[in-house]
Length: 461
Length: 105
Image (cartoon, rainbow over all chains, first blue to last red; front, top):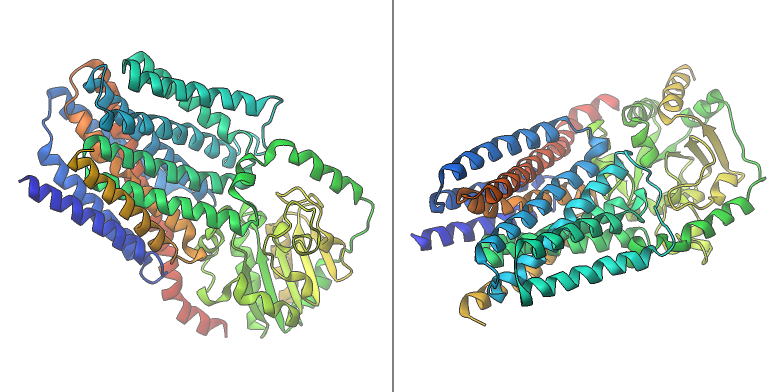
């Protein structure tokens, strides 16, 4: 019978791998998610007959599954598409917390001197799982704007974080070498929870997606470690898959911002102030504004328009308004495309999800490499709620924090229209020369309002 | 190092390469669903949570087991459902594109 269970776990692992590979194309992606879900059902189905339920055990398993499923379904169904990143953070934190708790329960059964093959992965799982749990909650709070999104720093912060990390290492050694008693491994858990908070606090809201991706990889590794403790191959394979893919995704995301992962995670120390100075130095230059009617005329009589959507568009819930404008222009024979920067939205691919929700036709969404050569033949670039991703400083100013980040060549177009709330710089906190370009027209205000007014004006034009 | 541990370690190392290989083929456009989908997969910790919860006997293990099952189930169910919601729209767009594109022209 053990063979059957082992084969079922193997089948589950294979289905996870197949599911992930199906995610590489939008055509098969949804089936890929089903494939992985079937793998999960098989792994759980193979587990149930092996369990030896105590009376209390049966009750809490039933209650836990019912409560967890209800929370999961309601959360996943209710969440707005703009809030996807923080929802992923919450679910990820839940997984990390579960991994830490499973390891705690395992250590409780082993007594004061667990075998190293079980003890080591257990403490690893407690530390990494707890960091992932509390770190994800902070990431959620930052993205949900329950707390400030700006980096929280104080003097000596790195020293304090270092001390927490050192204390954690001390308790790891204590648990493994001296005595694995509740005091030592619960202290370890509490310290790791604190480290998770301390780790995410100094990272800005704009960098949260990278953090969530990293914590996703952490949870994966914590789960893999649990697999070592429980001698369960499906946990090892599934957890490692997530750990490896999450690490790669984290790297791809920081590359898309033109920064190293180290800079994303630890860059807040001392950097913010320097860039604030650069902004102040450039004030006093004038920008060009225009009336809604003139802009509408400009758009309506263009041949080619490219829309550059940014996070501001999502904040203003203006996806539908922007699509309405695009449809209207297309009816007049204007060629409209969307240029999607890899980090548009709150995480890579988030803007595609948001525009998909607004039924924007698939082929109008162009990735950066695909569209960057077309800007020079474009009459109007409409930048909605984006800033840093079209900032030419990334190409021209070696000292700039975004120098080296691949950007959209919006500056090559004949006209550039910025829909922005204010002259406030983007997340990178740096001034954008393109705003002061003679080819640029600023339209201040809420993106949704502005777009709705533009739609009406284009109708009249 | 005993045999079982060696086997597990082999699986671990191979899974690292498979994970990287599979993910490097996913386009940026699908990175958000991908992150959410992998997030659901690590919900397999529910297997471990069920294991410890089923055998719970002391008050401490009951509390730890219950919390672990709730958190892990939330992770699995929420993860798959929210990923499906996202991917459903991707598919809907493909299906809707032909009539809609025809209308706008």
